[in-house]
Image (cartoon, rainbow over all chains, first blue to last red):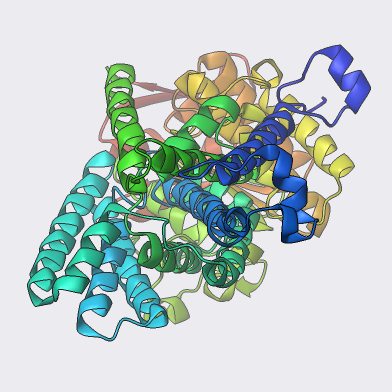
Length: 349
Length: 259
């Protein structure tokens, strides 16, 4: 019996070979869109860069191009656009991994409090220490790890959505009040930083950041993508995963640590960017099903696409000012989440 | 050979031989599922108890075996497997082959074809798991465990085991017989040791080589169906009076009628 998931029309398959399945087509489509979005986002913003001078910027001597445009593109836009793609991919893939780990399609780093756990860690480091990036990142990692652990514990004790959301409420409340307390200890400059940071921002993206967090994040995401079999087995159930040879405790520990290692440092830089890890995996599952072999990869590219677009929107919506990107993603993600909850209810009834 | 003895289960000692089908019978809460979970290596066993009455798989200590190793010698079908995510039937069944990454694509598809045929799910192939009925989902999960067992037999050559916990609870009569025939085939043709927890006494009598009757966490009797199914024992196990007679169709098989 030929195991072909969603076979395409005969003509396509004859042309491209029998291995071309719907996931591959979707992946290719989303990737192409991502490349277009990256280019478009890099070229426009408070200062638009005309397409026709692009070759001159990239190859030519800088004489006939205003050096300002060159700097805007290469030093400001490009790192920011690339970084937003990395962050988007990271949020979406960790969302998929958490949903499998918790066996709950609503698990998401923001909702269950991992992001705010990381935020509390980061704010603690910003206010109480000199605020070097490494220190902030480590504190954020520890905060996210604790929050993940707590969410997992509560999620197991109260199965279904309730435990996770309760954990999220608790952690978000604790982190919120912790951050509130710390703001009393903060001076004026720290306060301003904190406010902008907590709404989420990619404005601080530099090449250094991309060079440091890019490979780090991509390496961890690659590891997560390679765990697709284990994540599939987890969907069947924890006992069933063990029956299929996946030792549950080590697997769970590895997944939680890796998720916190990805989310923590990113939160330390960008602040809270919610709902990407919820919206993207859901759309991907609706299109392709939950099989993680495709779901992880397509979510990575899709998450990158969503955040690049959101960042673009954040930059061009209120020129010359700029919206916090967390605001944009919540604006899209909040209603989506509501719709999801309504849908879950109607199918259960 | 599997051998057990845990205190939740009181002084249970049981052997499962390759090529044999062993039925576990008992009232609700008699410890059937606990026994199966213990043999599957799911429950952590008290080390002190374990040294006194160890659980052994093919001469190896179960506790010392790694989960991945264990997955290569036995397949388990737990009660009521739940799966809320949208996976295809083909994807669920293929998971049975995850413990055997060394199998080639060709070998995999041959094994899957066998599992599909034996579990009778060819008509479900290509459907999505969440949209199936409860009984159909049960058959798909059975196919997955069957695929794991068949792969284990092919890779190891040595004795492999199939543990089934009430696999026929939501199946119609035709599919109940189909499933037990497939389990029987796994014992006869693949040489696997099959342990099956059942509620239907007559189904168990028809297909199993031996029956273990459990009550209060212990095994009261473990013998051939014709010897094990006695009215006084059934009364003790189920608390219900029973009449045992010869099966009208199958010679040598007892037929139990609860009164």
